[in-house]
Length: 337
Image (cartoon, rainbow, N blue to C red):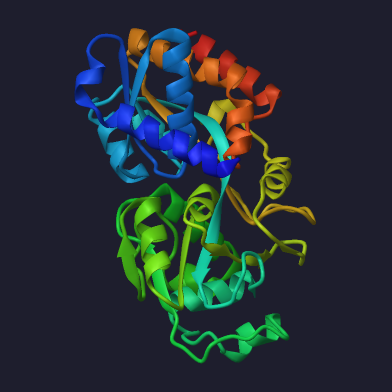
């Protein structure tokens, strides 16, 4: 099923990348690569349902925030939510669109998806460079009976301003005081070591090509590239694999607040089944662009009503109906619905 969906999305990419297609009724957006598979699928379906074209450029959350703040596009997309003070500074509206998970991936001979187990502390030490070989005693202690190579670990991270990085580093900061003190969290950080890839596709491509490497991507990119993801120890002390069910379990505990512009992180949530590196992706709109925003909101309202099955097939968690209704009230309060 996923293979068919990715072949379908290749056609979507061709549609979105063809400039001559966009004469007339078009909505432009830019930002996060994390949700690109689901946005592409929704855009394709919306065009055939309504005749409106969505031109979305997956250029990273940092660039998406810059483009909407400069009023270059109709909407920006970021996996790193803006605080209310930032929303006010740039005169932006913000709301979540869909939920997914950030997944560490590895390229190790003979290791299948979900076989390698890591804790958050060990993952942080790998990215700090404190653990630099795959047969390190701390990794072996979590993986009794699993044959690990006596080989250096190649760390892969994002080179661009990234919401995926913001989610990942916020998680590492929550589980490792060393990481919090030495590196911290954000869309762009000073990495202690490693190779930098642009976007989720760039990180996935590096890990696919480089033996004994580790990186982090949204799960759809791991599946598309047939890369092995890890099992990760969650807040409840359970090892879980990334899945729609695990992302849903993490999202279950979210407490959304429209008065804060829905600012919220979903890392290290409680629950036996929760994936610990979950996150929402957020839409950003220029407050003063009322008619423009109405057109954007029509697209996302259509997706909220018609796009849940597509999102789930691509291993994203649709927003719960109560949250969708809250967002509709938020739109009404701002005169765009």
